[in-house]
Image (cartoon, helix red, strand yellow):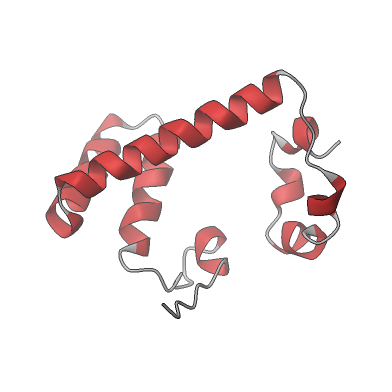
Length: 108
């Protein structure tokens, strides 16, 4: 598979990620992080209509597991390893990742 992904599509709403159903998945991820139940329910319906019930379940499980692992790592003070920090410096700066609240815990 030769899939070209535009990572800017994750951080810049006007950019196309290049992923099938990328917009719908990002809308769902954004709704999960918010506190608007109607927006969450709407994005759930859109995912089911466009990708099917199994895709909704998979997306929800993926988000939940990522949140669990991320919170556990932050909670016990695991920093990102140096072999990851240096190669990701430009990427993190370009997309403002260093300014995410959790960066204080994980970037060392």
